[in-house]
Image (tube, rainbow, N blue to C red):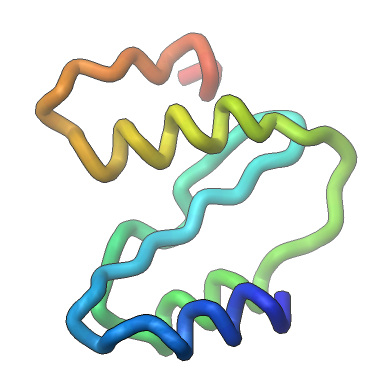
Length: 79
């Protein structure tokens, strides 16, 4: 969490940042925003869980960044 917050703090203020968590599944926990306070709050809410759905996290991240590109996320999020 500290490394993630350090990374966010080093980004230019004009860069929108979002947070996707992944363990057994992936979920957007903070949509892309300019609010560093919202991003840090999302990072602070993380709880250690079992699982490493890294691929699902990546696909969900891309689908969030590029919503008009038709990226199918149903099979990675179960939604």
